Length: 292
Length: 292
Ligand SMILES: NC(=O)c1ccc[n+]([C@@H]2O[C@H](COP(=O)([O-])OP(=O)(O)OC[C@H]3O[C@@H](n4cnc5c(N)ncnc54)[C@H](OP(=O)(O)O)[C@@H]3O)[C@@H](O)[C@H]2O)c1
Ligand SMILES: NC(=O)c1ccc[n+]([C@@H]2O[C@H](COP(=O)([O-])OP(=O)(O)OC[C@H]3O[C@@H](n4cnc5c(N)ncnc54)[C@H](OP(=O)(O)O)[C@@H]3O)[C@@H](O)[C@H]2O)c1
Image 1 (cartoon, rainbow over the protein chains, first blue to last red):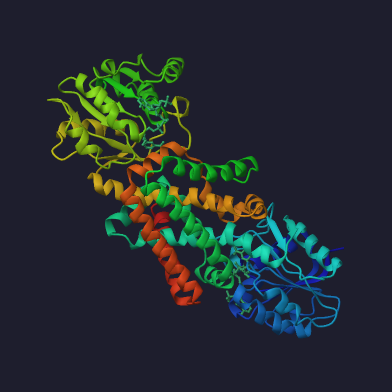
Image 2 (cartoon, chains in turn brown, yellow):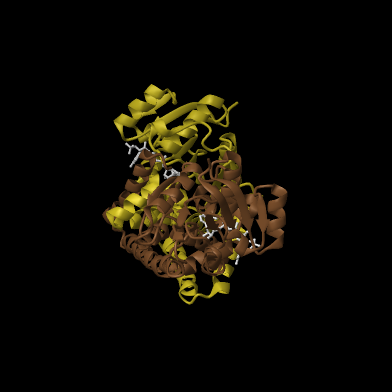
């Protein structure tokens, strides 16, 4: 018996279609797979890929599933939830995979019909590609999925979403929304912002320097640019959705960079090496944890 | 016949011992290889590794070579040149591999005895390790070596250093000092400064966030940390030696980051995506150039 009788993925892009593929390959997530989207092109492609049993543009039809997983861009999650929730059955679970929580949790919690549970979970996995063709069944293997159930969420529902992610190959952790957003600002949003920015800075320099950056990127610059290839609209939405925490984290970073600049300006050797050494500590621990 | 009768490497660490290994393996760089250092421990290790024919702590002995290559840390290059130059023979070439030029070129140029040429070259290759054990013969393969001969340098001497690096597997380019330093600030020094700083920022956060960074580093943070493992003393010296250009490049970066922050604060979607798109352009070109 599968975890759910039916699972509906709304927005079968990179993340959503990866869940569908995993469900299709293992048969363990749900007996019936539903894919829903407002885009006919996406639905056609999902039909061609044959990764769902039911392919529909009707939110009411998707809402009949035991578990409805919203995988649309961050900025569209709330509107999508509003369109689906009125049709959801008592005993069913709504989840989403949004990369930023902000006020999403309490907002959607307040809209829940009687008997419907809301247990969002953010898989810390992705690539720089998007759309139904970008997904693959192993995307979540050995990655974390951060569950952010609202206070008072039903234990049984939380456990089912936990199992869902474990069946996708992920490890899970339960966190409050604000901690989730602070962590993601540091480990993901700030690095992306810096990566986009260093590319932007290089692009703004003289033609001569731009050309040199391309020739000599292997000397350090390259490491910063892999993540800079990610989808601009998705990252725009994430930056805006996590605005306050991200800008605060950026402020700390800029203050630290200016501290380093000051030490360099003054030729304060001890202060420079102290800062470098502090940074190396984290790196060493990452290597010990085999994350690098 | 080898390129030089004798080649002396002063400071056989990562870079210097890599040149010696390459010379030893191919036999093409020099008939006699000399390794010189002020550290007895380094000299003992070089003897054990058997990567030079003559191993000495005498700068006067090293100075007898046709080509003397100074591979000590940036901050020690000038003093080492002052110790060696008085003993060098007419017709011989002095070179160094310093990662920052600053005023080094004209300073050493002014010290040259009659008939000695000075042609420094900076190999854009390295690892996060140092010392004679860290070197390997293929370190420079398919990397650039940036030659920065002083104005009026002898063409024949420049050509010999060019061939030396090509025999090490590198491609060469000739640049003026100031352009070299501006390029390296952008492609190497600024990325290292940012990498050290983001690790430092993460380290300064709460214990909870630090732990999370280690758990979830794969989400972007990790890409920044590989280069943050590099040697603190070497990078301290580089930052100080290239202070003016580096701080100017950092200022541009911080201004660009604050421009992005402003766009995020105002929720200016078009401005955010425009900045992200500009960054992606460089990334795309890197991929086309197969540098990423
Ligand atoms: N990519 C990552 O690295 C990553 C990681 C973890 C979590 N997430 C989260 O996963 C979610 C989806 O990201 P993704 O990378 O999978 O994006 P994606 O590949 O672009 O997929 C999004 C899907 O949602 C559809 N869609 C867009 N707007 C919609 C709307 N208003 N109503 C219904 N469907 C809509 C899209 O169709 P069209 O193509 O026609 O617009 C597409 O099929 C986001 O919430 C994101 O924060 C992403
Ligand atoms: N590593 C890179 O990524 C890289 C890339 C391109 C160019 N470079 C340049 O290459 C040079 C050497 O860097 P490296 O990475 O090879 O460093 P390294 O491995 O630390 O080697 C430096 C060597 O110089 C010796 N030394 C230190 N101070 C000296 C002094 N005052 N007089 C004589 N010998 C001294 C060291 O001996 P002890 O160990 O006893 O101090 C060591 O044998 C630097 O100028 C650097 O800018 C480095």
